[in-house]
Length: 377
Image 1 (cartoon, rainbow, N blue to C red):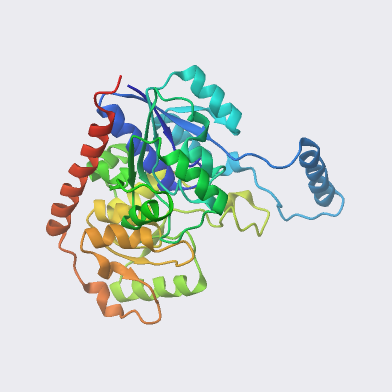
Image 2: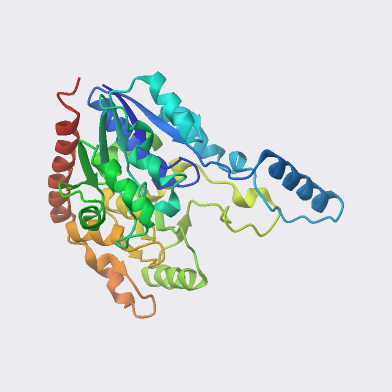
């Protein structure tokens, strides 16, 4: 079969890239031809407004000597990610409007489209939430429509009334619907009138730790305490230092010095994203891991590491609670740093039990894919 994957645009986020790599590889291993749709943001501003804004930036820089970068060259700072994507993921041309999606799909003759994974059903994270319910394919009944491990990112309903109405109609056209969190099943039933939704694993879990090691080669040196934070606060940094001292481990991370969403100084080097291979290596070779990332949690488990997850309530806890509950690892969640007992850092994880549960969940997830992709002409 010729299959399209529709996910959030691949760019800065390591987790978003690696989950797509895993899903594409799994589907390819099953014998399918797979392309990931490169759906980017639509620019709401006119070409004139964009041009005038660039003129303003040049005047500020060269006339008033304002050195703070108001915008960044995103292609430049994420070029290591772009290199990984070009080498390991088959992408469509850049598509940044709904009419372009209609045109591309009419010409490409796909047999099926998979929506997922990651937070594809979270409106605030989407360039057009209706696209991720395949509004541009309403008239195509000869194409199989499936969601795999689609995530709302939270257990709260964030859709407007009109979005809810339209998405309820669109999701009825899906032949198979699966979500990444158990809370997603309830949200689909309560708000989208879909009661046959299945709970499956994030695609990154469908490959083994050894599969990812093939991307980065053998270990050369041991990493002590590896950290990966999407939201790094002063409180978090202080906690990490306490943990490193308690465990007597050196600190390591594989992230840009500054976030591209927090522009402070003019050195573009401070925003350059390190290679994703270093991120994978950090999880594989670490002795201990602290993270606030869902995929950081996934790779801590895949590599059988001691770890804790610091919950960011603003980003949503449902993603973490769902998978850790399934694996019996709820005690690895930290909701309040001030109340955390550092002696808990020494608590060990029984990975024999964890992996026994994980293998069963993996079988069920692969069964969902095979069931909904088989026998379709």
